[in-house]
Length: 576
Image 1 (cartoon, rainbow, N blue to C red):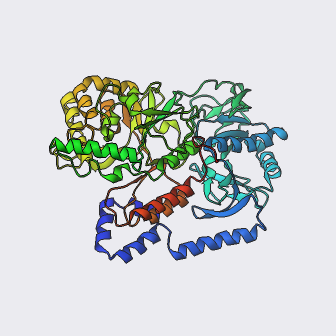
Image 2: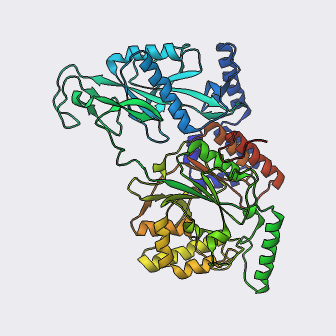
């Protein structure tokens, strides 16, 4: 039902919402997202039946519901998706090695399910070994179709899928408080390849198939057929442990991203008394010059910190720990909980970043964006994030970059206004118009769309080139202490279009969730997000349009984030 609702255009949903009485709309929304009392009672009954049917759960497990299915989950005190992927591979590979089941690892790319290959003639033996070695724990085996798991079976308590050509072995993991952390998306895929008993003529793959060849059960990155001469394996490290892999596959795939990728956060603590004083003084000086300032150029909500940065870093640690280094850009502010001794994090002050450029102190994110590429030690490829953006599930580097260096960008449906930038425009709109005018002037091409609130893939060399081509615009924006209708939005917008126009970026696709925390239906949408966890990234933004008081907003966000990301990251100081 939810997928049907999400497929309806947003404009139509808004019309329906306006036409219906609020209570009716809320009930329809709750039904669509599976959040009615009936839905909750039904799910609770299924989990209760699982508990009863499974006997007494051990202290280290908990019964929970995931995407409509009840599971027994293993509680863990530490969670990283890369480590879970390695753990699931070890469960399968160690069992096979202990019982001499021939296998090899075909693929093990970052943040993707590992693929283990076994000849179909050994399928019965392989499943028997897994049943013997993995029974007694909360481990599942599920057939895989179209990359999705179907009809999961608890090992030792249900018959194993004897005829499936691809199965996924996994555990569902939960926090110590019982919240869902990860499941089949982090499992290990076991593929049973058909072994030819006699030679076959060239077919779909364009080469003869000798007897003893392995033929794939589904498409993969590496091979359709593995001939006897190509079946030789050698031990190579996979997740830190030597595993058999094909000798002929001895290099990373051309499409695999191997370049280092950093992350840059911009952050401010709007409750800091010293910072508040600096902002007030700068604002008074700005107004004393009779300078025009839009109401949203320095509104308090832009600087409110609800501890989002802590949870955004947790999301990075959980779901994108392939990131090499994190740079936190601040106005000489450091979160009290941040472990600055962590070698993977560096705090960069505005003074260090701007040097003798611009005008400090600055309260303009556009100005800060204009200088990010100057961070010492920053990699060529990096992601620019605001602290209200979170990774929602395991993501791989190729979601943001191509292996040949091209970056990706994610276009929004929101359009740039057709008229010129004006003081009465919201700052985000005037900056978009100024970006458009620069692109038109340089490339004689027009643009029409804004961008989604997601991690922004960047290339340092692109920003350097832009600074030369648009020197006056960079200088003017850097000197603007508050958002102005003369600004350009560099990292979050202009860089994408400039990169595309110069052949260094292409449009990408990303599964994205956006929530205005001021909307009345946001709590319901967050409940659904918490239960499904099926978005790559999500953003919790504030539009200054709330019918919900600030304290209630803070509680809603705090409860949601602590449930979604319950475990401290490696970037946090250990508890006293």
